[in-house]
Length: 236
Ligand code: ZN
Image 1: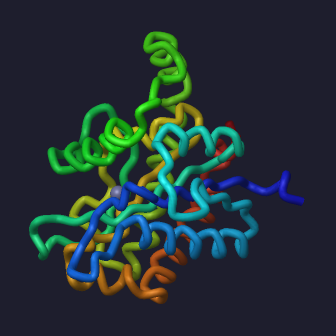
Image 2: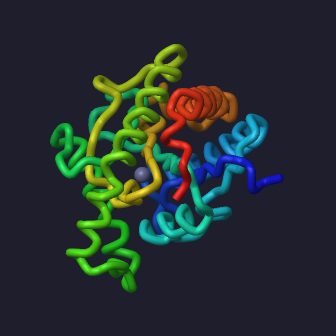
């Protein structure tokens, strides 16, 4: 029965009026690629025995804070956000995984998190913090140490599994202040599945098989993560 299963919330980036990265004359949208990948990962995780829940189940807009709320409401034990970025330099390619940090690992990661976080400012007029700032900080620091350790373990597994079969970005585990990763109690990672601006990455991400192979590796990473980090199994 589902209650005994580990809940993983898969978060397809963007949606609806927020397309994410848009590329090429065929206007491929990041939101569609993220959604297709998320559906594939859901099937793979269900086969592995997880209760996999999507944060959005169609092409509609959902704020970053709402995504976090969905993870909390479903007692998620892990939150995996899927994205595909673009870069002005077409030669830049490879997969990267991000975990939360107040200090970004490099300027590019910081700029990426800033772009992603701005979505709420632009589209979600009713966005407001749930707790007042001071209480929020206390709660966050109480839980976040464990959560951040678990998130980093998960990122390590993603890198380890994907490295066997895929090209990764230079220093593929990166840190930045993504709002969507800020659940105090739910370990969270954001995976940039590649660059839509790069020919090879785009080809992979637009093909069913290409997405499937990335998702299989992520499924293996999730399995290995839960196997080797029992302390991260406590759900929110
Ligand atoms: Zn994105």
